[in-house]
Image 1: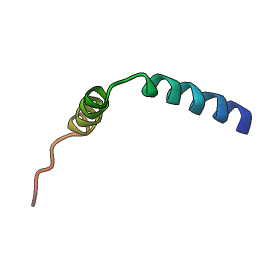
Image 2: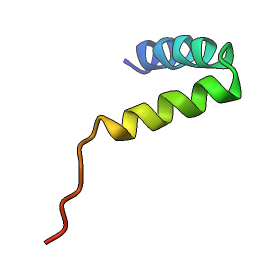
Image 3: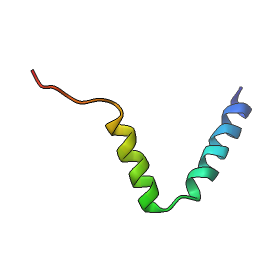
Image 4: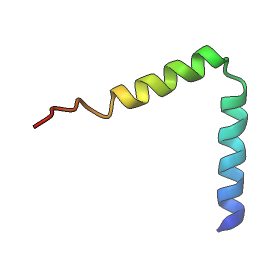
Length: 41
């Protein structure tokens, strides 16, 4: 199981490593925007 996790983490790291800082920032921004809107109460 740990070998599978390691392979997936390395694959994800390789994909993210190829992105620019601006692209990473935009992905992070979109991730949090898709989580929904906070409505205080």
